[in-house]
Structures are given as C-alpha cells and as structure tokens.
Image (cartoon, rainbow, N blue to C red; front, top):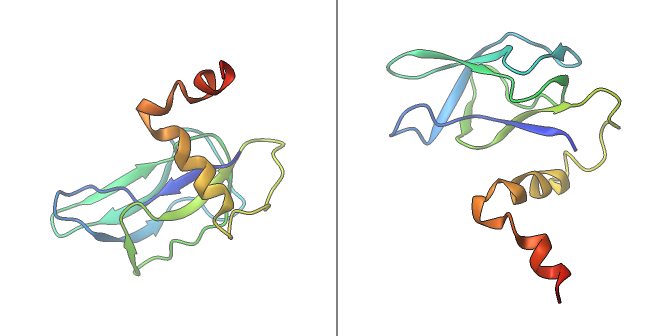
Length: 114
C-alpha cells in the first residue's frame, strides 16, 4: 500500500501551509529521510523528509498554494508496488489512516475470537 505524504503542522496556529519548493519531482526514487519539500511559515522555512522509500507519485501539492494541514500532497509507492489503483479517489487514503490509531492495535485479534 502506498505511503501518504501529508502537509504537516509545523506551527501551533497553522491551519494551512504553502509548499515553497519541491526537492523531488513526480516519478523520482526517494529514500526514507530524503528531503521532499520545503514549507514556508510566517516564522521560518522547514524541510519535510520522505516518510518512506520508493517512487514519488501523484504529487498534488503545488508550490505557492494554500494547502490544509494533514492533506495528502503526494504518495510514495514501494519498489514493485502497483501504481494508481484508488489513490486519487480517496480509497487508499482511508486505508492508510486506519492503522495510525494507537488504540486500534488489537482490532484484528478481537474479531478472531468471536
């Protein structure tokens, strides 16, 4: 499943942000920790790292445009992972968000005992 790249909240008062510069472009191979883009706030510029290794796809976060905090700005597909199915429709976004809840860890085990 592709990894969602989101616009992070880098300031307590931040509701939207702007990407001032992309360091990687659509189709580029990136490694976890590589700098993907830079966000500019009223106070400073901050570089945002890749959350995973793979191929950068579906870059929707445009430079100089207000983007909501937490919005997906791109996706990273692992090597050999099929590209495209459902990402732009939001189907994958729902699947990516589900496992991020720390209290959700035992959900599968609870259903198995039933």
